[in-house]
Length: 310
Image 1 (cartoon, helix red, strand yellow):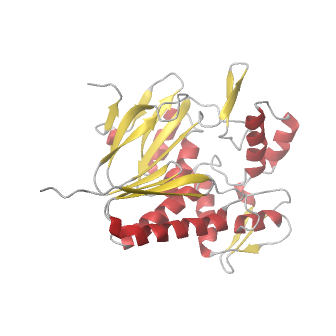
Image 2 (cartoon, helix red, strand yellow):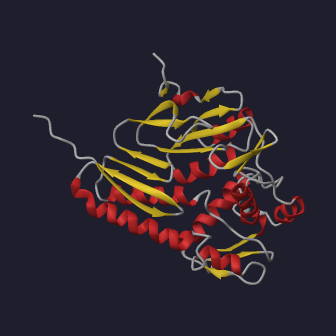
């Protein structure tokens, strides 16, 4: 007789999104509880929308004084600065003032005031993040500046979830923190969202082993005006939504934190320009361009199955 595998999916809300952990053994209930507790703990530290968080404390004291933070928050901000350097400023966690303006614009489906956007853009600079490792403190150089770790926090939390499950001896699981996915164990197929179509409509399926998978697209949040799409991925150098030939990116690699940061970066680069960065970071990718081309890096070509293909 073949043993029946029990599939258990546990869900909870944190980091501004719905998260799930799929387990294949009822004995791992404690492992899930520890994952949930850890992610909620990170949410309390890193959530810029929570006035009690460490990130909010840094923002309140911008241009005034440094704030001592936990080792986790310090390390994540330090990593963010490294990604900013690597991406030549395309990835930048100081764009919160800009992001809030565009979030409101998307909500109201109307363009924001240009002068307001330019003022917020001038506040965006990762070079104004002052880190002091001696006392684990962080400061923003100028008043009005604000951090938002939303483009990297889910990846860090997913890596932490994987660490906890592995320590509990879990060998088969799927971690999904708001679309930041880590697969543990056997090869599984993941659907890739078709840009500008109803959520859950895949254009292809990607088979992945024990890897992290992160997707990002300009179709996720936005509005159209005069035939132009304005979306939520803001280029810190212009203050406006990025304008490249890429509309969707799916990255595959070992670290979800790294992929989270890179996904934001790659979607702000033209498809040809991102190839060197992906190779440097040893990350595989599937890109969808505005004209409908599917660009797949060499390491994924045998793993990609187009929907409807024979």
